[in-house]
Image (tube, rainbow, N blue to C red):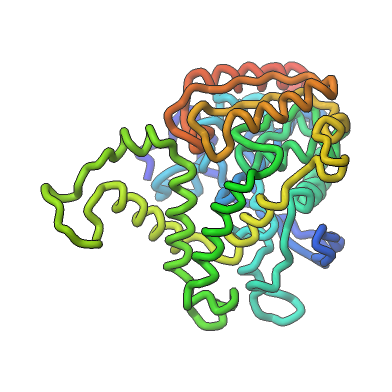
Amino acid sequence: MPNAIPEDSVGIVEPQIARFDTPLELACGRTLDSYELIYETYGTLNAERSNAVLICHALSGTHHAAGYHSMDDRKPGWWDAYIGPGKCIDTNQFFVVCLNNLGGCNGSTGPTSTNPATGQCYGPDFPVMTVPDWVESQLRLSDYLGIDVWAAVIGGSLGGMQALQWSINHPERMRNTAVIAAAPRLTAQNIAFNEVARQAIMSDPDFHDGRYAEHNTIPRQGLRLARMVGHITYLSEDAMGSKFGRDLRSEKINFGYDVEFQVESYLRYQGDTFSESFDANTYLLMTKALDYYDPAADFGGDLSKAMAQAKSNFLLISFSTDWRFSPARSEEIVNALTEAGKNVSYTCVESPHGHDAFLIPNEHYEKVFSAFMQRAAQSVGGDV
C-alpha cells in the first residue's frame, strides 16, 4: 500500500469494459460471436483524438499497466516505471490505453469466462488465439474508443510482437511503433521451453484435461513448475548470481531435498504466487500464441517483405543479457526494416537483468525511449 500516491503516478485508476457483439473470425477457424475486453486509460484524449498510445502486454501481463486500483494496493501497474506524468510515456502528452487480451484471465473474455453455448466456463473449449487475432480485437477497441490513428503502438516481449503485427496489418492506423525485447518468431529452444511448461501443467493430476474448474480444483503444481521454468529464462545468469549466489537459507547443508539454497526458495515463492493468480488454460493459450507467431510466413518467409507493409517510424530496443529474446533477434527486425526502407532507430541496452530488463528502470533505456516518444508527441499536434 503506498503511503501517498507519487506525483509522477497516474493515480487511482478504474478498469473499463467494452462489449462486442460482432463476431470475430479467428485464425484457428473458429469464431467468437461476442466477447468483452477490459482496459484502462491514463491521461486525456485531445480534441483531435490524435494523441492515443496503445500498450500491448506480455505473456502474463494485464490491462493494469500503471497507477493503483486503490490505496490498499501493495504495488502499482506492471509498467508504472514508464507510464505517467513526465515519464517515457508521458500522460501529460498522451492518452494511454492498455487492455487484457482475449484469452486472458484478468477480465477479458477467456477460458475462465462463461461459454454462452453451455452456461459453463469455457475452460479448454476456448479457441486458440494468435497475435493477429489479438490485433484485430484491439482494432475493434480502437474503433470503439473513436481512435482512428494511434500516435504509437508499444509493447515488450509478446507485446512487442503485437506492436510489430499492428504495423504490418494496419499501417494506416498508427504513426509510431516501439518493439522492445521481442523477436520476429521464436527459436526452437524457446518453443521447447514453452512445451516443458505446458507439459508441467497438463501432466498435473488436477488438470483434468483443462476441466479443472468442473472438479473444483486448480493444477497448482503444474503452474508452479511452469512459472519456475519460465522465470529462469527471464533472468540472466549474472542477475541470478548477484541476487542469490549460492547462499544457503541456513548456515549449513542439510543433505536433503528440501529448500536449502536461497534461489530455490525464490523460485518456489514465484511459482506459488503465480499458481494462485493465473489460469492454467490461459497459460497454455498464451504460450501457443508465442509459438505460432511468424509474420514472415505470409510473405514467403521474407521478413523484409512483411515489413514493407509498414508506414510508421520504429524504435527497437534489446537488452545485452536477454537470452530469451537476444539482441540478435531484434537486429533481425531492424535489418528487415532497413532493407524495406523504413525509418528505424535501434539500441541494445547494457543491463544485468536479462529479459525482465524491459520492465526495470534503466537510465539509457529511459533516455532512448523518451526521445522516441517526444518525437511521437511532436508529430501529434493539438492540445491535451
